Image 1 (cartoon, rainbow, N blue to C red):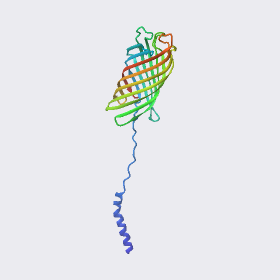
Image 2 (image 1 turned 90 degrees about the vertical axis):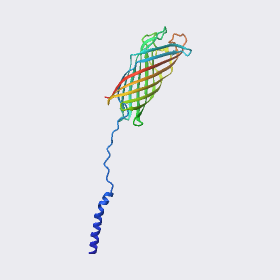
Image 3 (image 1 turned 180 degrees about the vertical axis):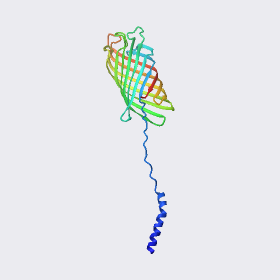
Image 4 (image 1 turned 90 degrees about the horizontal axis):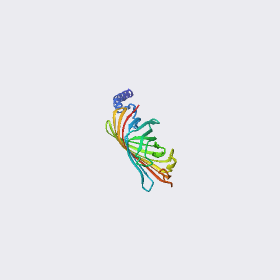
Length: 266
């Protein structure tokens, strides 16, 4: 009887302590649901009008031989940006250019021609914080310039090389983003260049852009910016200026452009 009484007492104690033990046991947390974060890469198309002041300088190393400053309204830019490998990498194709005129000034190099610049780039974009995004890319760059006159036009020159760039974007308001862009390239390969220009020694490209973007909708934005580009190339053994003895030739073109574009995401 005493054993039975003790067993009943122990059972009663366990029943009384059961709620406290249950309360002390931590509740199982609900499973977490992953939230997809949109890519920082600005995918889509950009079409822009780029009215430009083009400054051209030609030097033989002994003093300036030719200079020209013209305003070109018939210039444009087209760009397509997409992603690769699950939105981890940026892929971009870009082409720009248009009318390329230089004052004649009685020189052999005055022209009413055109030039085209193309880029094929790959890179990535990183969101540093809620408002700042950094985009870096690198790839191929080429520029082709052609005058309309076989003998007296701007030299026919094509150059190809590699470029890299860095862009900082800072969202200052829900629909307004400011950005700064820096690019530098080396273009040591010549193609399609008229023979009397000579042999390409070195060539380079430098680009800088300040821009403000205004979102009109989740898929459409307007870009307004200032774009500066400097092209430099040097040749040896040139007779393009009519000189009887081959000489050095330095070509420089500076472009000051206003970019007015529309960007949209399909």
